[in-house]
Image (cartoon, rainbow, N blue to C red):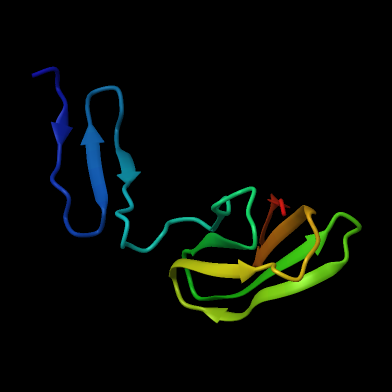
Length: 123
């Protein structure tokens, strides 16, 4: 009814929805263990933290990934990842036990993608 057709998922994580006004609409669904469709730097958890935090990131294709932490002056204080990664979802734990309280920035670079997140250490 209504001219809509919902095709079942075919193992690729794609659902095709169509009707008279929309020729074709493809919706990509990512399950928790599937390959991500985009690069992403997720918020660290917990935030604020003392002394450890976990940082999650997604890589949709094999790529060299750099994950680094900077202080508010822009100085590099830690390199958490600097290597080739295959497509997938990753997380890394940063132990900032030797760092003073304050604001820090986690930056992810992979191919043409770059993103930065603010983190706070409270002691």
